[in-house]
Length: 467
Image 1 (cartoon, one colour):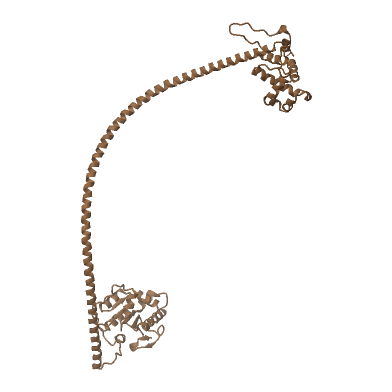
Image 2 (image 1 turned 120 degrees about the vertical axis):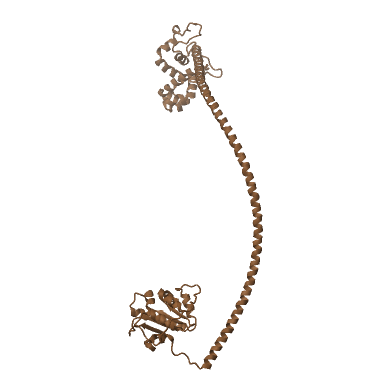
């Protein structure tokens, strides 16, 4: 070890002078390379773990242990110095031979300049420790400071250039903005002029709108006053109408009471008159000794022994019912001593035209038998043609008419059934209820002119369907 080395007061460890950071980094890098090639028996205890690191990680992860070993372990430092001497023989001779020692470069007014290899010389000086080796560290530190200052100055110059360039760019941009701003200002002035014209127009429109609003408001007030007056008038009319309605209801109640009294009086008079007529009829029959009627007018007509002349009478009403309404037929059959005359084939052709004529007659006559048994009405059923033995049942009445359990079945021999029906209606006395079932419009008009009531075939078919 060189004579210029100093030792720590507490032990024999040489004191560590100020080592510039680049020199220290280079020393640690060399120590890391030597550690990987060193005999394991010669590796210091503090570096056993660092030796297991990957070669690329030793200098970074083991920097602190390696530096402590270089400073405090002379054997490890000599091993690293031996390796450095092998790699840098000329620099090693230069450090160990005083004649080849470093000299300061001449001062040209700009300060001392480090000669080439200053960093390597400082690393070798630290490892070999020749006389004056601290001067190499000082020169390396000065070179590092000068380089740092130069880098700082260069960075400052770069920063100033960047700031100058940025200022120049901003100036150009500002000039462009000024030009753009001038154009925008001109556009703004034009837009302001347009907006002022629009403002004047809008003010004029607003004045007109306010005037119209005032007119509309005045008109609305007038309408409101008129509406209020109309409402008051309507209220008065409504009150008057309510009073009129109350009077009308009172008058209607009085009229109903009067009508009820009149109806009761009329019913009493009708009952009294009916009783008088019935008693008179009974007394007349008893005084004249008249026997019960043995011959019906229909039997006389069928036999052809009487000439019947149609008689005009008033046509009875149907209480607003249709001629095909089954309810009308039910009401008519409920009247005592009603004679029901049926246009046979007109009914069968309407209801069951798909059957043979014999079956049609049989089905119609069977239905009429049930009607006769339920209502007690006299029923005559007229068919076109001559009577045959088939299709009817019962006994023969006067004039060759067939009676089937209360139903007289007539055939229009030598004439049509329509004329037979007309003669049957004409033979009945005035006042007897006669009902003709036919959908023939001509027959219906003729029998109604003679006082009978015409009912359509659908009404009888509906009546038969309920039996």
